[in-house]
Structure formats: C-alpha cells, structure tokens
Length: 410
Image (tube, rainbow, N blue to C red; front, side, top):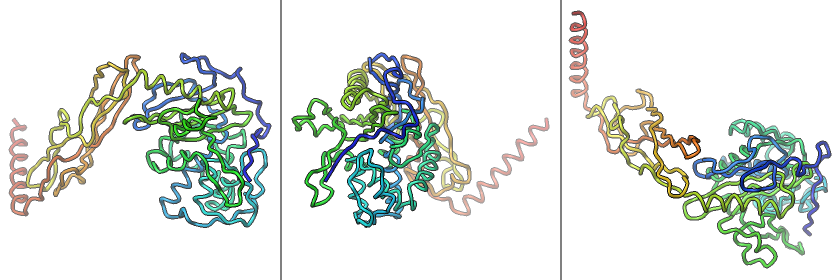
C-alpha cells in the first residue's frame, strides 16, 4: 500500500503565503528562486536567493547526498540489507511514507528509491539510522556536511524536512544540487524514475512527485507539466514552506539547476520553474571563449627543476566556457595564475601533468563578473637531467650569481 498525506509541519512557524512573495521580472509568484548553470555555477537568474527558508522535503537532497557519499566510501552498498529501526517505523504520519514496520528488511537501493521518488519519510529515517544510529545523530552529520560544502545558510533539524525549523537559502540549495550532480551523476538514474513498486504485495506503485519529468509527456494527466530535458530532482511541501522544488534540465551540452521556494500550489511550483527555464533557453547560450590546449599569455612555459630542459611548455587543460546572452561576444581577462610550489615542479614531467591553475574573468552586460578556473598543464614530457648535466648547470648558476654580485658592487 502506498499512501500520501501532506505534511502540516511542526506548527512552530506561520504558514507561508503570498505576503512573502517577492516581485520579479519574470512575474513568478514565490518568495525566492535561483537558476544556475550546473557546470560552472554561474547564476542566470535569481530572486531573493540568499534568504533562508524552510525547504520542506528538498531537505532530503542532503540525506540523499550523504547516502551516495557513504556508498562511494564503501561504508554502504546498494544491495546491503537494512533492518528498519523503531524510530523509522514510528515516523509521524503527517507526510509521505511507505509504511515500514519495525524489523522489516529492505535493501539500501529500495529505500533510496522510496526516498528519492516517493519522498518516503520512514525510508529516509531508516537510511539515516543505518548510517548514524538515529535521526538526530544523522542531523549532526548533515550540518557538518553543509559546513564542509560551504552552505552558510543551511541549518538542518531533521533528515526529512518535516520540521519547519530546517532552513536553507535557494542559493545554497542550488549549490547542494550542483555538488550532487558533479560528484554523483548517477543520482539522476534514481530521480528520473517515474514510478516504482516497493513491495510485491503493494497494490499500487509510488509515483514521482516531479511532474516536470520529460518522460511524463506520455502521461495523459501530467503532460501539461512535462518539460523537455527535465530529469530531476526533489519537490517539497509543508505549510511553513509553501510548495518548493529543486529541478534540473538538460538540452544539448547545457544543464541548468533551479530552485523555487514558497509557490502557491503543487502545480505552480512547476509552472514558475518553467518560466526560468524558458527564460534561460530563449535568451542564453554557451560560448567557448578559449579552447583547450591554449597557450596563456606570460605563461607560455613554466620553470622546473632537475630537468633536461629548464622549462616546460604550458597550456590550458580544458576550454573556457561562459553562458552568455545570445549574440554576445564575451571579452575575458586573465585574472590570476597560481603555479604549484617550486618543490612540486620537479622533473620528470609528463605531458598533461598539472602545473597550476589560471583564472579568467568575464563581465556580462549588466556588469556582473563571472570567473572560470582551469588547470594549467604541461604540453609535453620533460625528462630528468643526468647528474653530470645538473652538476654543470649548478656550477654555471653559481658563477652567474657570483658575477652579478660583483657587478652590483660598482
């Protein structure tokens, strides 16, 4: 059996409403929003993006991230069996759940899908308990992780988002989503599942709350919400938060991440998100302004130690790409370069080896500055010099230094 009951929150905060909405140029009815380029983090559009608000079940993105980290670090496996704790079985009934009973056994993968697709609070707490022994211990881990990721506005008080005391800004939520997609791109394999049968005996499947999934174009009831390229991520609702949604969309080589907070209905969160997606795809494009393997002015070569050669030719590892207004010809400037420490630049050097980083800056039409940092790498091999070569080089450097000291006396 699969049942959904909308959460009313803890009651500690007033219900979110239109009195909290912020005026914006896209006419969206909401309190805060942001749209970023998923690759670079470049902000394409934002509304009141730094104000912390209750995220509701978008909170589960942090729980989902931690589970993925545990699996990556081999502290969990997808097929590991979890025995449902008393705490998970007693999850408050004012939210989505899969009706787990104490002692039930399910795999990490099944519980993860129940959390990611069906927003099941009891499955979420079962995973939190498996990792940390209980929800509150897991909450401490969530806050530690938020600090590590630089989510300065985040304060978690539950693993599920049921409590209205959990707070985070739209900007930090987008940053969390970006981290998930960069470190765990396989997350999308779960967030785009349309429906899932948790148990063989269940008479109904759990349905994905993300109605914007492109695959919903074939669904008679949801095709009005389906949006080309959408394949994640997480919806939410409690009365103190309003209707929230963190989404992601990809077309071609462009992927965006969006966050909307305090929209007026479960339908509106998708329509408001679509306004930002339309704005981005209609008005912006990705443009490469410096191709990979480019020579950087003033850094054509980098000094190294103990090599057959004294320097190694240097180039950029990847291309420099900015999201710009369509038709714009962006101008960039070299902002800074940072070479590795002298003791790290020692032969032998192999082609492709990192020598440092370079940062370029782009200023858009509105005067906003955007940075891109790429690695500076060796474009060819440099062998280590033989002892005789290095000895004569050292002797030569000694006499050059001595000569300069003498010249400086006069």
